[in-house]
Length: 475
Image 1 (cartoon, one colour):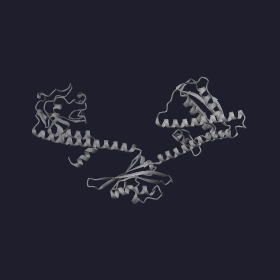
Image 2: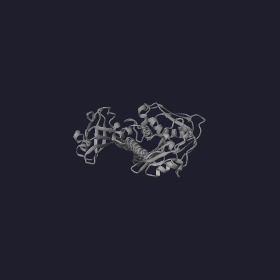
Image 3: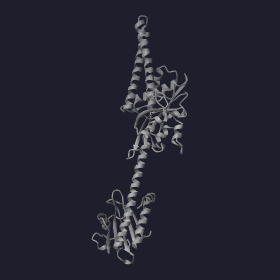
């Protein structure tokens, strides 16, 4: 079969091509019936193509043949089998009920490079005659054509399966992957992460030059990178492999994306560069995480400095002016030191909890808890801390008990009350309410502050998330 025929076979439906093969075999040998069986990858029968069987007769055959009798025997031999009477062969097992009567038989395995891909067989030569040696040669020729078609279809399917798998894999990796053609230098493909990095600048029909014309590439020190020094160009021109080169992509809207670029040339057997694969890793999330961690540590330092300053001031007062202080005044200073020490211990405990959360080892011990008691305890702790806001509690009288870790719930509620107070007008009310939702109890804390914009809500509960330069969203 010619290369052109192979390309046609790939584009056509396999069953359609095999139908033409078996119909041609029947026509040339004057056989009334014919069948072509194709095996699947495991050797089972995948497809049965028949000729001479009417649509009304086909249901009488039942399911696909099981590969018994002569059909199994065809898989064990390397050449054709010609019989004047099917029933005379020792491997014949007869036909299922309702099957058309058949006597003369001609069959051969469909072989490709020594592998059995199926078999093809004909029955009932015109006029009741036997099949001839010339018919054998014709059937072997048709079997050879069928073998090429089936093998080509398998290879085409495997290539497409591998291509689809590779595309799915490339599109799911969190690294941008781009492929450039060595002859033209054109951008051949981009995966989803690459498109995200360049903010969808690649439009249909836009060339590489047009893409590059709207981007500026800089080194970390701010120097612009000429096109000839780009990793992809170096890989295309000289076959150089470029690894871990930091490049800042300047977008037209003013945004800058810090990336790490690798470029690897793909060589032909002759050693020529045929394409270049470039990977681009967006470093922005790592930079943001480091920045937020620094901000978090700065906030923690500030939070720890406040009680420490109070403790230091109270202790200094007691040391320098103890003789002039009354017992009540000294008691107040000792109480302040005790409370602020507890506050510092709580902050340190929260930091340890952050570490445990990241390590996945934070322990939670739920127990039956009364919601009203939990809310009242959080309210008292909040008010004792010198709160500038009033707390309004609105709880239904019939709330069921909940399974909760009291300590963790107190952390959550006091944190919510603290945030509500921090970003609300002085003396405004903070409301705590609860409601039963299915098998859960939802506790809500609301305030009269400026709130959080809708577009920032998805970021509210991320680690080290800060809503803006003034608002800390919590951990």
